[in-house]
Length: 370
Image (cartoon, helix red, strand yellow):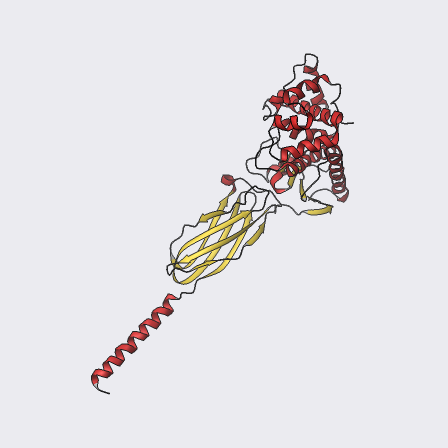
């Protein structure tokens, strides 16, 4: 082999070495080394990730999806701010004070996508996180489609609440034909302060809340006889909101407030004295709030609010008493189709909200469901 041929051979050999080395280098190893999520209830949800690659990691994104009733499945995507490097360890804190809280018992799924400078991209398998209020040692009982969680009070206390829950569901089905379509969870806090501690920016008067898209109810009930009776009524009220939300869920329209709140009031049973007193003040002069006005959110003033709830109870009771369970279920089904307020009433009963206003006021019925 002459010198010229040897040099050519060496040049080709070195070129092949560089090509192979370049190919190996281009084939970077990109991987998510660790991923986790934890809840700092109720304020923050913390997502941690570490990833490594032979090439510089340039892009990390968090994706998450909350499990709830919604008309379109929404996936949130978060761009993570970090310094590019071959090894990255970072986190993202979801501040519930900005996005709104998640109730105990709710859940979400999340996953990551990571890219490096070589163009490689990996996506992790979705993982789930269950949101719980870890401040308390929860116990639970389940009957049919209802699970009650509680941490203060004995088994009989929880049993009483479960009995009231099942009775409320039976009464609602008898009055309206509406039944649970998905399971429901009730979180019973030992008092209103504990309940408000589980919420983001709660109102100071909050004693119970129905998280209807999640199928979750949270109520503060002290395990005493006096508070137990209030608790049973509160459960019936909030449970009705949740069931009615399930059976009328649609992307076009919500129920008029008088119907939603009236059904919940009827579910509680006989009107309490505060509400009957509010009715008595205006009954003689027939100075009621009109049904059309009651279709909108109620007044923030206590006296007008009491009257609005009391009237809604009477209006719904009138419809159930005089026209029956089947008509009420037909009305709810019509709203599920996205009908407007007057349109739905006309279709089912043959009168609009103004007609209903005149009819219920002229009727001796409405104080309580027969």
